[in-house]
Amino acid sequence: MKLGILKENHFSRVAIVPGSAKKLQNLGFELVIEMSAGQNSGFTDIMYRDAGFEVVERSQVFEKADVLVNIGPLQDNELSKLRQKSVYISMFAPYQNENVVPQLSKYNVNFMSMDMIPRTTIAQSMDVLSSMASLAGYKAVLQAANHYNNMFPMMMTAAGTIPPTKVMVLGAGVAGLQAIATAKRLGAVVEAFDTRAAAKEEVKSLGATFVEVEGASDDKGAGGYAVQQTEEYLQKQRKLVQEKALKSNIIIATAQVRGRKAPVLISEDTVENLKPGSVIVDLAASTGGNCAYTENNKTIVKNGVTIIGNSDLADELPGVASTLYSNNVINFLQVLIKDGAVVLNEENDIIKSVLISKAN
Ligand code: NAD
Image 1 (cartoon, rainbow, N blue to C red):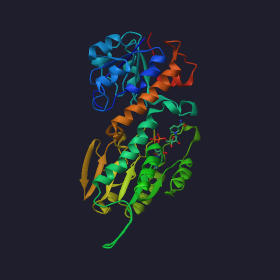
Image 2: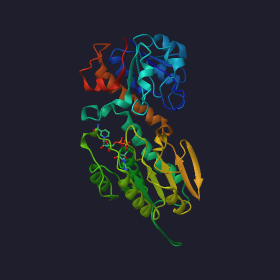
Image 3: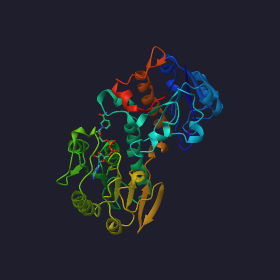
Image 4: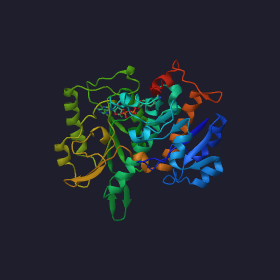
């Protein structure tokens, strides 16, 4: 059985790193990778060859792979090259686009979406969304620090005392908590908003202040995700965000509701009243953004405020992001592969969630 890995069309990352070879071989795989697949993440063809991968042309990966893995899903022109009844593992985000599954069902392939891994304790080691969000939260703070015209920690010098930077984090999930931890390490004073009650203790344990907006809807049955809030709540929240934002220098926006447009929490009016030089990093940009002015995949400046719209900051840490994705995929394959063969056991909750379209 052959595991194929493609060079990504749009990312710097690679789905499987050379260090994963042993575990994959132990599962019964022979490994085939496209030439220079790892070149943008620090993994050379020589490293792959030394680890036991066969390094080949892209077309040969399609021809040989029984199980094919990548990160950004292929388009129709390449989906048609997948082998009949093979397994293709990627991140299809079917919860964001209802056309994904009907489109995939045209192919006689088993499609598995790593972003559908359930948020259960047993599946935590396979959770690619958490791995990538955590890196994005860290990188968001570094991006903000780079664009900010001041420093984060308080500093007492002979020339005067510099006050610490104030960072506001919207959404204290995986990315938000990592942003809080990173900003605290850099010496900032941090406050955070979230609608889930569970987030309060987590924020406090990182030494940040939790800002509560009364009347949030919360649902423990939503699989760890937030639920949509009423317009009345969001209005109240926008007002409090504005009040706090005017005293902040940096805003890291991560608030999302799975399968829906991100809530707009930073209004135009708030941006227009922020201190010049302030920076907003909007990790919710791909689902509309938490800031009214956010443009996805663009950095813009409005009234002296830099607004970075980027939901894919994990790709700016391609070495570690590839390693974590690779580990997540191996942990999933350890569930999928039994005695050297793929077993589509749909009684297994993880396989049932991930298998979004099945071969005939
Ligand atoms: P996410 O990316 O969907 O959302 C980011 C954050 O935005 C969430 O914390 C959400 O509550 C928050 N949010 C939504 N609307 C908001 C609003 N109006 N104002 C402020 N915040 C708002 O979520 P995520 O970060 O991927 O995960 C959220 C949580 O799920 C985690 O913190 C964790 O508790 C849980 N989780 C559990 C597991 C597991 O058990 N295996 C794995 C991953 C995450």
